[in-house]
Amino acid sequence: MSDNLMDTYAPLPVSFERGEGVWLWDTQGNRYLDALSGVAVCNLGHAHPAVSKAIRTQAEKLLHTSNLYRIPLQQQLASELTSAAGMEKAFFCNSGAEANEAAIKLARLYGHQRGVKTPAIIVTTGSFHGRTMATLSATGNRKIQAGFEPLVRGFVRVEYNDLDAVRSIARNDPNVVAILVEPVQGEGGVRIPDENYLESLREICSQQEWLLMLDEVQTGMGRTGRMFAYQHYQLTPDVVTLAKGLGNGVPIGACLARGAAANVFQPGNHATTFGGNPLVCSAALAVVRTLQQQKLPLQAAALAARMLEKLRDALAETPGVKEIRGKGMMFGIELDRPCSELVAAALEAGLLINVTASNVIRLLPPLILSECEADQIVDGVCNLIREFSAREIAAA
Ligand SMILES: *Cc1c(COP(=O)(O)O)cnc(C)c1O
Image (cartoon, rainbow, N blue to C red; front, side, top):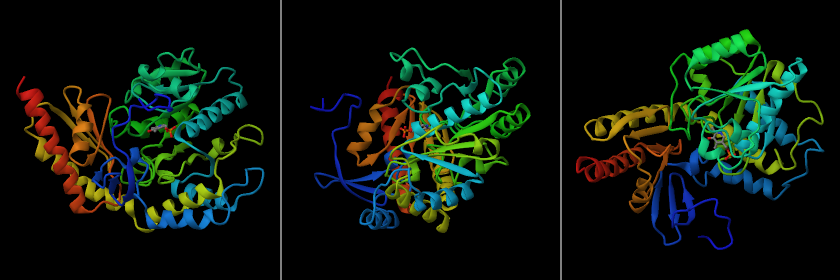
């Protein structure tokens, strides 16, 4: 219970006061190794000098003007971000859910402009797209929807990683105008689709003139070992949504588009008061430039590959460990039973981790971690899982 705060969270009994790189210090002065990055937000670690400096400098000049005036920093960010993504245009907002709202509205407008009166968007099971009404309706998790009915209509759901289901809809449903999908499902349990999945979706979308809309809110900004997860493959989406790692902690989201999708919105169609203000854009510019100049995604991918191998070796014989998945600095260790108690156990041991989809230990360390810090995370996590296994599984 947290006095005057609505009970939307049940926070762990710890407060952090200071951070540096991969480390956080609580109000008692205890140090923690952060293997979660505030859920894939602080990809450059805490108090990154380039980001701190950008915020400090901009804060002394100008925070906000509104989008009624030109914002050069926003134009600069749009230019560098779309160029890194192979996209053409950007709309800036304040969160992942808002980025997806923009994509959903864009797809509907695209449909109406093409004469589809009740445009529908294909979404998948196990997905997570946010907590606003449209994005929770798109989300493939009943728990997130329960109690908030009536849901927003206009979504058609297929099994994640099932191409035949999409092909069947292509033959039968003339209302579909887009697919919204995560390149790797984050909240859904670090689910990595088959190697050909996204490229095949691209093909289907091109044939059908559907928009391929990738939710890269969690996978973007270097998280999977490329700037954007789709850059592991030979494809360009029509729409990409970003947030989490884009500002390294300041709230900024983006909806990027190219081709026909880039020119759907016209003045009056969509807007936001705060979106893309000078402060957040200066921070995001520092993030984009640091990731690129230091080739951090590729560097992190190499280190992440070694971490994945070590996790697999160390846990190969541990009862209860079902599967260990990874794409860059995005790891999921699936156990054969619920294991959310591991989050508190890890905290006790000075390590920040997460459990998602009730039985998947999720690690999202900052991309800037050293080899030694990577080893500490791997060792810490393996110890916790071995103890859990000995207590809960082998003993049972
Ligand atoms: C976190 C997340 C969102 C929602 O982002 P918010 O900033 O919390 O609104 C949407 N999609 C994916 C894939 C996410 O991981």
